[in-house]
Image (cartoon, rainbow, N blue to C red; front, side):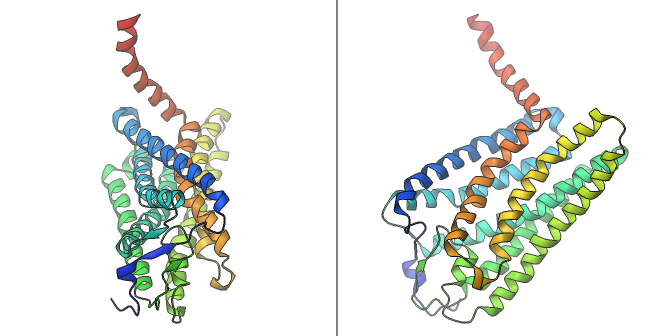
Length: 317
């Protein structure tokens, strides 16, 4: 790999929120809380989806994939962020930066496609309910999930490799709290037009086409729901889809802001706070949104907890 610097030996200084030292303890608490919520919430969804037979459906198969993805995504970023927010040393090794960049890009890109796949699942469930079990077969669900993961990995290989080949000319001070493509491009001491073009083109595929497919799916879903005569059935259909739609709006809104705005209008401080939201806050919100707005998950969780508690209550009461 061609680089006109020694970043591989020295790594990077992650300036993060050094300009706001008084804010760092607050951000440390926020990141720690979000990380704990991400771990507990997403592990709970995965375990409940696996143990409760009534949740062995395509919807919860994809939801488990999303939860596992969020677990890995936040775990690839949160520990390093907590270390840098806590102490005076705000560094990351070159190898650590490379791993963080490839991993976070792969997982973030996978989520873009997986959310579109989940919208397709909801479309089939609402618009073609009689054929749902046949269309969304276990084999197709596995293929769609695999396609999401592979597309994320491919996108990461393109973006990260092109970015890491840029010469930095001894500039190791990364004005960010994580190794992210927009911030790394600003360190380059050569013209980055080609990199920005590649970033823009691939981002169009993940951040424009995928949300467009989701919107089309929900357009058909809305039409189908409005044709249902039963108000109770309408409410149930809207409730099932609203959780996914809420996650879509939060996730895509922040990522599109980061990756599809012109570089010359990129505000670094604002970008860092947006990145903090979609890397730390969003993965913590996802399980809350899905459990609080999903009656099936809440009932399954109560049933599993009762199975665990019942022997203890019978023993001591």
